Image (cartoon, rainbow, N blue to C red; front, top):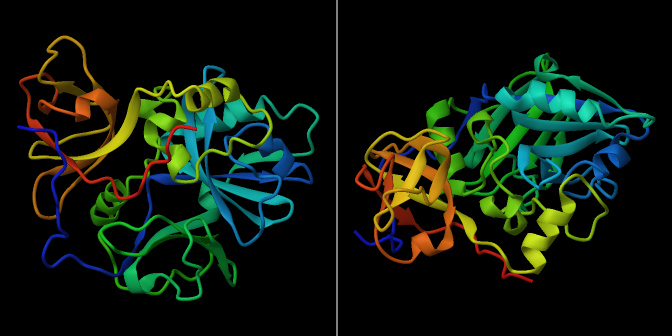
Length: 314
């Protein structure tokens, strides 16, 4: 089976609008007059110039440039920034980031119980929200962030204090939201793939997750060198398979039974059957031969078209 991409249409009867609670996500709150400048020195994106009408996709990296968490971050006020991330990484990330506060006037806390988080799809996305991904719009106490679309459907992240009335819209099954997350091609890091990837291995530079003009942050030299020297050998891909997949599963190529060529980053059931996943893998593995999960003779995978263009190496 060739690894060439195939068209894959939206399943018939798919719900195209609705809202769903996001139980897999949590919130780190950063407060204080140095909140934005502190984050500027820790994350891959520019928070010092972040406007109240914007959000940022960002990563927190080790000194070796490996992602240890990913966030959708935005300001609720000039002195308060919220970072939405996978709940299974929150405690570890909060502990490590707090170690870097030192004399900065910034306080970090787990605010997951203080905020409600919902995913919005289709007509549930407020018309007033600007079209550009990572735009932010305030609806009273709620912050609404435009995400990358999936399957031609608009999507947004809704974050508001826990006592706020839930967003309007028909209920949407959370597994369907998770599938749309995969089909958007924008990965959210979770515990099984902690410290496994440089941001470009998940295409973060192509979806607004890395700013190469900002100042230093942990791992910056590695991230910049990967981009500017054209040394990237791994990328993020979207795949489909008939067998179940979960984050951390190994992906093999038919020509090498010994070494995996990639890793499943995020996966979800496809409403039409089978499973879809975001896989980080060697670029040459996408060129010919066949892909399989678990072993070179395991269940087959098919490459799907990436839903956004990749930036050329600089």
